[in-house]
Length: 409
Image (cartoon, rainbow, N blue to C red; front, side, top):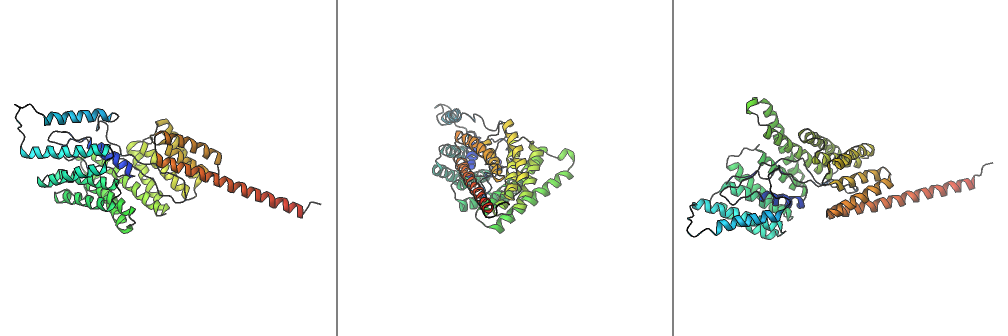
């Protein structure tokens, strides 16, 4: 069983992780191997925790390489094809002899269980998916199929996180890493580093600051060291694909650490990390790439929290303009970010206009989380307007009183 990359992505939220698991399992075939296309690291993604701000950092979407998933926009076609393939394997002609070895039969059974788990995830049946994955990993253990064990543990860990089971996700990621390392995978392998990054993110969410910082530091230093080693290799031994993957994973690490720094109000460090992540993403994927625009908007949001409203407005305007041209999938969130910056600059009319545009787009795509935050933003604009009007009225009253008490001679 060929093991796919264990998900070269870190997840901004549970909805996106569910989306990733569904996509990743779609690569499984009914044959004796799991065929998976290489997956690109995407400089992500997620909402920066802001207690007093209305900004919404764009939710990142993990993006797989082109051609990695077929029939993406028509899941029913894929489902029909999958069941047709399963039917073909299960209902052979009576006279056809099954020449598979016992090992191949067990492997096919594991794959079938993973496919059933995938169908449950597509239907939102997380408990059913968990049951199938537990059966798959038990069978993998019985047959000593380490690659299947690692792959299934990784999926189980992601699913546990989707269900809010951080402690269980932590144990499963550690189990997957243990099997990888005991099987000879080096500590600086990108798959190991990626799982370490997920663990660091889990620790950050659990407020285990020391463990989180240790994890982020390990990931950053390991990746920077790998990139330095790449430079020393002879040209014929250099892999451009691996170099790019490693550098994008470094960008992802900086992005994740920036979000953690913002959540604990260490905004100066968050700015440094966001700038680093943005630089990598722009150089590797282009200035108009969706993730580059996400990071640009994220950086603007942090600058706005620091009171650097003019700098923030300049960056977020750039992000919104480029997103309109490129048709960014999360344009409604970028618009909401820009509306928040405008509000903090006292430009209430423009802020309301953008908030309403963002609200309509968010409702059209069913992003309820962003809809709620935009409504909170509109409410805050209203409150700020009232406060401004009250202050103006107070000033006028005091001025009139002063004129009454001290008339001009």
